[in-house]
Length: 299
Image (tube, rainbow, N blue to C red):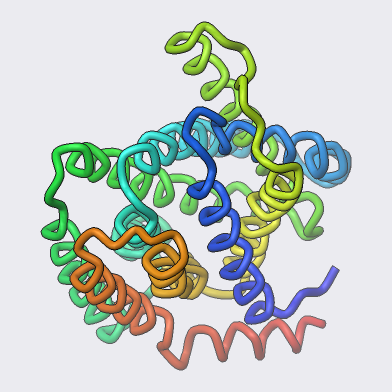
């Protein structure tokens, strides 16, 4: 199933921004992330798991990587839920999606990927943006969101690295969805038990609009599966950096449409700086161009 790497990342950006914004628009009492994961498990997981078990070679290493990815995904969704309950998209999303910074560091040491001087310049620029963003927090409630956003960012780093290694033998796109299903199921279980522990409920009392549930379920899985696919043709940090191009778009939508205007000038500037750093990381001409050329040659 051939998909152009650049097209895959473009589609991933649109879907990832969309499902985050849709989830943030819902009331916290509706537990939108629980509904989104439920929809994914119903709509895409069976199809993906069928292809995964047909193609996967489940040796000890892949099981270990799959387990690590699932645990990181579970903690990611738990952290994201807490972060969005305390702060707007314009603050949380740019921080959470800054994972190429630690990924760039880890991938050079663990995956032995060669990163250029330009990539490291992008890392420094993005760090400056992160410092600027964290300095925009004024309310005590939002300061708590910084902790959860940081945890979510580090979880993104963990599952990006393990997924790059764990999906090397998977060539079919549906198999990638099956691989993700383990992590999303564990995340759903964690959110369910947290809801039971805090509210005494196994299912939220409120339900978001059905359109949000269905689209969110489709987008949450497809968006990241497309990133994993692109990782097969370029360094992890580069693929994730390109997939995070929606940071400014999400921040603008948060400020203009959702009216989340607390410290909006500084946050928009910080999001722009972070995005600029990620663009520098991903714009190295020897990365995506070579990746797409190789993809074309391979058919």
